[in-house]
Length: 88
Image (cartoon, rainbow, N blue to C red):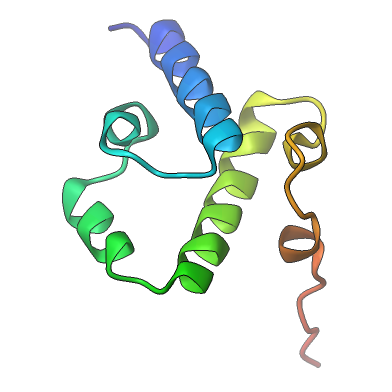
């Protein structure tokens, strides 16, 4: 699989993740997530899973989309728009 096909598969998996809001085993390989991480993710609370997914999607989305995918797919935008504290 060349790099262009890999990016296309990654984008399709990301769109599926945005629509379903669930990380499933068929999305692991295209998104580059190890099965060990998936097992740890499955043991997290629902709130923690939501936070991790939001951060993961925010990091991946700007690589593939020109627009904000959270708004396009109806996710809450507060988690990834929260300002980080500044340290002086």
